[in-house]
Amino acid sequence: MENPDLIDIDRQPGHLIRRLHQIAVGVFLQESGEQGVTPVQYAALQTVSKQPGIDQRTLSRAIALDASTTGGVVDRLEVRGWIERRQSPEDRRARQLFLTPDGAQGLSDAIPAMLRAQDQILAPLTLRQRAEFMRLLQLLVTQNNDLSRAPSEAARG
Image (cartoon, rainbow, N blue to C red):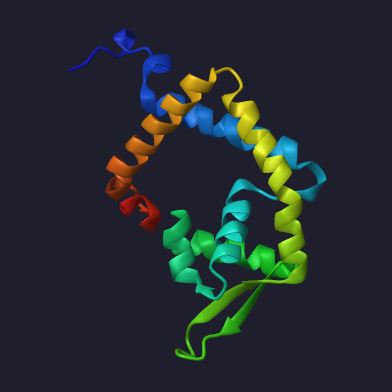
């Protein structure tokens, strides 16, 4: 049995990744200010913008969220008037997602804040360190994708 007194939590990758996630969300929310877009909402808007007509299940896989969480995100964006659900012509049970004009403007307005947040998160690193960090981060996400409760389709291939 391991002695808990010998474990330094601040040297555990899972703990540090969780902390970095907290920091990243905090910086993103600070930068997005009054617009009030969350990182997950931004990911949903960006994906729907790139794939108009995407269904909610495919959106869930694209942004690596479980279906119920994605449903809540889409609900909030729909109430806000940024996403519109339309019945699929091929499958009456499926709903396709589209950005509204307000949603497209909201996404466009959110991009500078998102870019500032990314720059602020990576600011302590040199350009070379940033490239290496991103390479390693992508490797970890890709190689561990199937261990997620909500694997990303993008990370698979």
